[in-house]
Amino acid sequence: MKILLINWQDRKNPLSGGAEIHIHEIFGRIAKCGHEITFLCSSFKGAEKREIVDGMEVLRIGRRSNFNFYVPFATHTLLKNNYDIVIDNINKIPFFTPLYVKKVPILAIGYHFFGRIIYYETNPLFASYVYFTEKLVPKIYKTEVFSVISESTKNDLKGVPDNNIHIISPAIAPEYMPAMDKKSTTPLIVYVGRIKKYKCLDLLLHSMKTIISEVPNVRLDIVGTGDYITYLVKLSDELKLNNYVNFVGFVTEQQKIEILQSAWMLVNPSAKEGWGITNIEANACGTPVVASNSPGLRDSVVNGETGFLVEHGNVNELATTIVKIIRDTKLREILSQNGIAWAKKFSWDSAAHKTIQLMETIIQSKETNTL
Image (cartoon, rainbow, N blue to C red; front, side):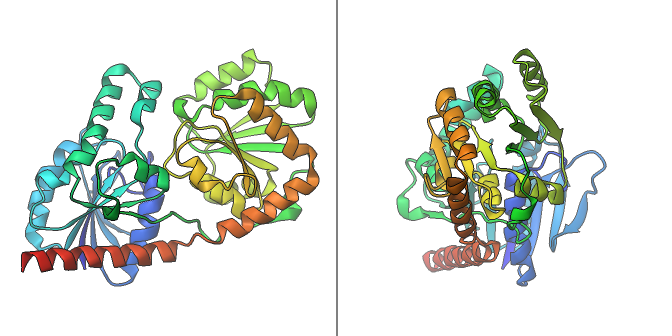
């Protein structure tokens, strides 16, 4: 197949995140199978306009702030080269390819939709822009086939026929594996991910007051970077948590694995996610997860088996659950073993194979309808 792949960023972009990992893991494998992939994305300072990354030809145009306005014109030009399918990655602001891609079939990939949560994250003007463009997705893409990463994302696509939506779960690299001998000698709680307001790490900091009163030797490592970190550092200081909370910042992939292997648990209090890949990464390292019972996270945590889901925003329940896991060694071991088994169910090779099959079906269907 000759594939045109469109996404805001590629994995070399400094602002890349989970969506970019997902794209490169799956479509990098698809490229290795012999399929020809052109990856259209935004540029960034110091980036080459054209290069091969993971077997894909990456074309960078525009900037992150205006890339979506470049996409229709660039796509129109590229499609003269006889592509078999267009992959439209819907990650925040959609590209609305069905409005200008008419003769080539489309596969839309959905990660997660903010909904009203976006008003919690940014200013009302930009939030309204994101919110209303998301609302248009089921209308403009109503006849397209979707690949989504979770049941929660599927539920966000009300208006798109169920049989047009296929769930292909993300996976993790084989480097994520348990190392029980590396567990911290004292209770270590970790958060790993971007530091954004909607991730609700303030809830975790507030819960630390109760946790510390029950487990005085506990420690919390917050791993990652983002625009909300300044507020959290200030809040930690106000709550007098500086002796217990460590803002680690950016880490390499290997450092991330070592942190997850040493942790007693991962905590993810986000208001909404598409999936929660760090939950599975933690489980693969033999680390239980405590997460909000919110969209996406409830798909990646098996409540009571690989960790626990708590009511989002309930600081007392969050603290009580964390303390329970710290104190109960047997429970922690059971959750750890269950998590390792759960994580083994998710494979990038399998996800890539399913995506190939789905693309082939879409192309054949388009050809049949044309004939």
